[in-house]
Length: 382
Ligand code: C2E
Ligand code: SIN
Ligand code: SIN
Ligand code: SIN
Ligand code: FE
Ligand code: FE
Image 1 (cartoon, rainbow, N blue to C red):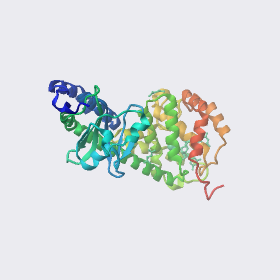
Image 2 (cartoon, protein in one colour):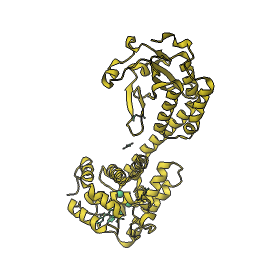
Image 3 (cartoon, rainbow, N blue to C red):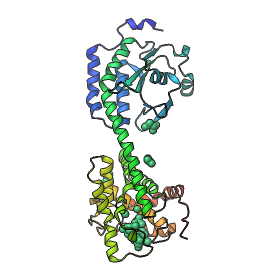
Image 4 (cartoon, rainbow, N blue to C red):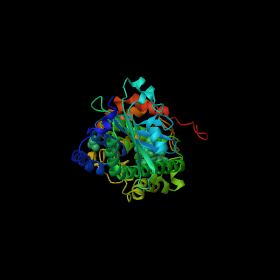
C-alpha cells in the first residue's frame, strides 16, 4: 500500500485544479435543482482528486440521516448517520482519510459485501453552510489509479471546492425547503377547497396521480411530470370563493348559478398568478385552463387545441375521469364502461385525441390508481 503517498506529488497541480473548478463553476452556480447539483458536485470532487467514486451527502437533521442522488434517473438514497464513515463525519464534523478501511471499525464492510465493490480508500469532509453549521458530507472512495491512496493534499483540494461551492448548495437547499413548504401549502389549501365542496377525500391525490400517469405516457420530461403532479391538486382552488348554496346544491344549477360556478377557474388563476414560483405559476395556469375544451367550446377563454397548455389538457381529463368515477353532491358515480364510452365520444371534441389514446391504452393503470385511493362510501348519500 502506498502509505507514503502523502509526500508524493500525486494530486493535480494548482492550475489544473483551478481549471477543473472553473469548468464546473458556471454550471454549479446556475443549477437550482438540488438533485442535479449533488451529482454535479460529486463529479467535480471526483475529477479534482482522482477518486473512483464521489458522493455528496446532505444531512437531514430531523431523521439523523444522510441522503443523496448518485446518478441521473436513479432514486435518492438514504443512510443513517449512526453507521459508516460519512455518518461519522457528519456527526463529529471532523475530516477523515482512511486508507485501510478493513482495519477501521467505523467502516461498514457489509456495503462492499452487498455490492461486490472493494473499498481501498475513503476520504470524508464535512460541508458547512454560511453560518458554519454542518449541512452535508463530501465522500470520495478509492484514489485512482490503484494502488495510490488519499492524501492531506487531496483533502485540501476538496476543501477548497467545498468552500467554493457551499453557497450554491446552501441556496439550493433553501430552494428545496421552500418547495417542500409550497407542496405542503398546496396540499393543505387543495384539501380545504375539497372539504368545502364535499368532494371525496382522495380527489386531489387521485387527480395528481392521474396527471402523473398521463404525463409519463405522453412523454413529458421527469421534471415536467413532477411539476404537474405537484401543481394539479390546485385546479379547483377557486371553488373556495363559490357560495355553499351553489357549491353544495344537490341538483342542477340555474343559468346564473352556473355563471358563478364557472368563475372558479379565473378566481383560482387570480389567486395564484402573482407568485414567481414555478410550482405556483403552473398551478395558476392549470386553474385557468382545466375546463377548456380541445374543440374551443370550453371556459373561461374558449382556447382551442394546443393553444391549451399540455398541463391544462391533462388536468382536464384527469379531473373529469375522477368526477365521473365518484359520487358528487349533484351526481352518482358512473360505471367504468360508461366513462370509457364518454371519452371515446369526446375524443377530438372535449379532449385532446392523443390523451384519449393514452387513457384507453393504459386503462388498467388508471383504474389501479382509482382503486388505490378509494374513498370511504359517503355516510349521508347512497
Ligand atoms: P367537478 O364536480 O369536479 O366536475 C369536473 C368536470 O367533470 C365537470 O366540469 C364536467 O366536465 C365533468 N362532469 C362531472 N359530472 C359530469 C356528468 O354527469 N356528465 C358529464 N358529461 N361530465 C361530467 P364542469 O361541467 O365544467 O363543472 C365544473 C364544476 O361545477 C364541477 O366540478 C362541479 O363542482 C360544478 N357543477 C357542475 N355541474 C353541477 C351541477 O349540476 N350541480 C352542482 N351543484 N354543481 C355542478
Ligand atoms: C429523501 O427523499 O430521500 C429525503 C430527502 C430529504 O431529506 O429532503
Ligand atoms: C404532500 O402531501 O405534502 C406532498 C404529497 C406528494 O408529494 O405526493
Ligand atoms: C409538450 O411536450 O409540452 C407539449 C406536447 C403537446 O402539445 O402535446
Ligand atoms: Fe374545476
Ligand atoms: Fe376537480
